Length: 114
Image 1 (tube, rainbow, N blue to C red):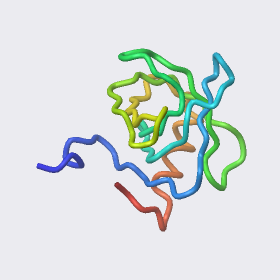
Image 2 (tube, rainbow, N blue to C red):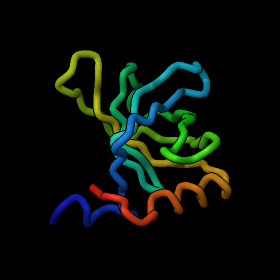
Image 3 (spheres, rainbow, N blue to C red):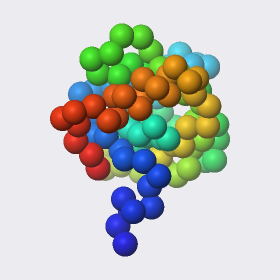
Image 4 (tube, rainbow, N blue to C red):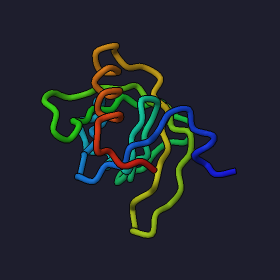
Protein backbone atom coordinates (compact mmCIF):
# COMPACT_ATOMS: atom_id res chain seq x y z
CA UNK A 1 0.00 0.00 0.00
CA UNK A 2 1.29 3.47 -0.80
CA UNK A 3 1.30 6.28 1.74
CA UNK A 4 -1.26 8.11 -0.38
CA UNK A 5 -3.87 5.48 0.47
CA UNK A 6 -3.60 6.36 4.17
CA UNK A 7 -4.25 10.07 3.69
CA UNK A 8 -7.68 11.50 4.33
CA UNK A 9 -7.39 14.26 1.74
CA UNK A 10 -5.18 15.00 -1.27
CA UNK A 11 -1.96 16.91 -0.69
CA UNK A 12 -1.30 19.61 -3.24
CA UNK A 13 2.32 20.25 -4.18
CA UNK A 14 3.40 23.82 -3.54
CA UNK A 15 5.64 24.86 -6.41
CA UNK A 16 6.28 28.39 -5.15
CA UNK A 17 8.06 29.27 -1.92
CA UNK A 18 5.42 29.63 0.79
CA UNK A 19 6.99 30.72 4.05
CA UNK A 20 5.35 29.65 7.31
CA UNK A 21 5.66 31.87 10.39
CA UNK A 22 5.28 30.81 14.00
CA UNK A 23 2.61 33.17 15.34
CA UNK A 24 4.04 33.09 18.88
CA UNK A 25 7.64 33.99 17.95
CA UNK A 26 6.95 35.82 14.64
CA UNK A 27 9.90 33.86 13.20
CA UNK A 28 9.83 32.01 9.90
CA UNK A 29 9.61 28.32 10.81
CA UNK A 30 10.15 27.04 7.28
CA UNK A 31 8.44 26.57 3.94
CA UNK A 32 5.59 24.34 2.79
CA UNK A 33 6.37 21.22 0.75
CA UNK A 34 2.76 20.14 0.26
CA UNK A 35 -0.59 21.08 1.72
CA UNK A 36 -4.01 19.56 2.29
CA UNK A 37 -7.14 20.64 4.12
CA UNK A 38 -5.97 18.60 7.08
CA UNK A 39 -2.24 19.22 7.27
CA UNK A 40 1.06 20.07 5.66
CA UNK A 41 4.58 18.91 5.03
CA UNK A 42 6.97 21.59 6.24
CA UNK A 43 10.65 21.98 5.39
CA UNK A 44 11.52 23.36 8.82
CA UNK A 45 14.42 25.75 9.30
CA UNK A 46 14.06 25.98 13.09
CA UNK A 47 14.31 23.31 15.79
CA UNK A 48 10.96 21.64 16.48
CA UNK A 49 9.67 19.97 19.63
CA UNK A 50 8.38 16.43 19.25
CA UNK A 51 4.58 16.03 19.63
CA UNK A 52 4.17 19.80 20.22
CA UNK A 53 1.38 22.17 19.21
CA UNK A 54 2.12 25.19 17.04
CA UNK A 55 0.24 28.22 15.75
CA UNK A 56 1.28 29.00 12.17
CA UNK A 57 0.52 31.71 9.61
CA UNK A 58 1.09 31.53 5.85
CA UNK A 59 -0.23 32.96 2.59
CA UNK A 60 -1.38 30.71 -0.25
CA UNK A 61 0.10 31.44 -3.70
CA UNK A 62 -2.15 33.77 -5.66
CA UNK A 63 -4.31 34.55 -2.62
CA UNK A 64 -4.77 37.70 -0.60
CA UNK A 65 -4.65 37.49 3.18
CA UNK A 66 -3.01 35.08 5.55
CA UNK A 67 -4.26 31.75 6.82
CA UNK A 68 -3.74 30.82 10.48
CA UNK A 69 -3.77 27.24 11.69
CA UNK A 70 -3.23 25.43 14.94
CA UNK A 71 -1.07 22.42 14.11
CA UNK A 72 0.15 19.27 15.86
CA UNK A 73 3.61 17.98 14.96
CA UNK A 74 3.11 14.31 14.08
CA UNK A 75 6.66 13.47 12.95
CA UNK A 76 9.93 14.99 11.79
CA UNK A 77 13.06 13.73 10.12
CA UNK A 78 16.38 15.41 9.42
CA UNK A 79 16.79 16.72 5.88
CA UNK A 80 20.01 16.51 3.88
CA UNK A 81 20.65 20.25 4.43
CA UNK A 82 22.21 21.12 7.81
CA UNK A 83 19.80 22.74 10.25
CA UNK A 84 16.70 21.66 8.35
CA UNK A 85 14.15 18.90 8.83
CA UNK A 86 11.02 17.59 7.14
CA UNK A 87 8.01 17.77 9.45
CA UNK A 88 4.46 16.46 9.12
CA UNK A 89 1.72 18.51 10.77
CA UNK A 90 -1.98 17.84 11.28
CA UNK A 91 -4.22 20.90 11.52
CA UNK A 92 -6.18 20.91 14.75
CA UNK A 93 -7.76 24.36 14.59
CA UNK A 94 -8.72 26.45 11.59
CA UNK A 95 -11.53 28.97 11.14
CA UNK A 96 -14.33 27.99 8.76
CA UNK A 97 -13.37 30.84 6.41
CA UNK A 98 -9.74 29.71 6.30
CA UNK A 99 -10.78 26.06 5.86
CA UNK A 100 -12.96 27.06 2.88
CA UNK A 101 -10.09 29.03 1.29
CA UNK A 102 -7.74 26.09 1.80
CA UNK A 103 -10.30 23.65 0.36
CA UNK A 104 -10.75 25.78 -2.76
CA UNK A 105 -6.99 26.25 -3.24
CA UNK A 106 -6.16 22.55 -2.82
CA UNK A 107 -8.88 21.54 -5.28
CA UNK A 108 -8.25 24.27 -7.88
CA UNK A 109 -7.93 23.23 -11.53
CA UNK A 110 -4.36 22.58 -12.62
CA UNK A 111 -3.13 21.56 -9.17
CA UNK A 112 -0.51 18.81 -8.86
CA UNK A 113 -0.66 16.32 -5.99
CA UNK A 114 1.79 14.22 -3.97
